[in-house]
Length: 163
Image: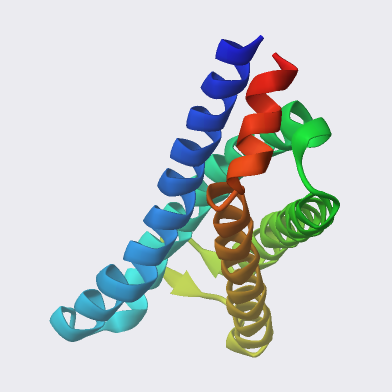
């Protein structure tokens, strides 16, 4: 069972890294470079549409692995860690649901094939909300990973002894 828990731990951290690392790199580097290089920065929005769709799917997989990791380690975690991990996981799940719904709302007001926004008045508030939810999600994800990675020695010892 110890090997299974270790495998779940490694997979959940790697999935988190792919999800949030991809999101962080895309928003902090790729978007800025695209806006500097492309004369019409709105064109890159259609790349963003595809990338964020993929990141949301990766996030769904990562969320399941993070939940599996929480369940696998529940007994040996300190109460405050269980609370914080459960709370941040819930925020991740809720924001991911919002991200899927907001992504669908954006898809309604853009024409991907023609690369045009059909209704800017409807697009802007949904896009703004998407960025706000993404920020909350990113913060919860950073806190979640920090709590996972800073498990105290006594918790790790208790975990090993429980095997």
